[in-house]
Length: 76
Image (cartoon, rainbow, N blue to C red; front, top):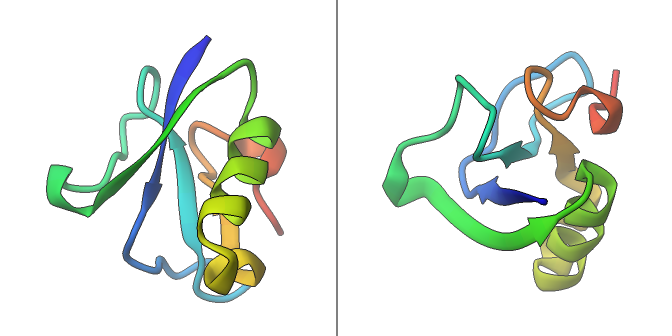
């Protein structure tokens, strides 16, 4: 299982500005520590995104997977 976090700052991407979910164990583009919101430990980014959308429903439309560490959950 990997530890996932949510960046509390929106990031630019081709699909618009998004709050990105990162795999803290493998990502080399993590946000600064003070911008990380802990989500917990999950088997995959899909589960982490479900948790992020549940914890932060007002951001749900804009939550996305990081292109570098959660590509299978990244919107194009």
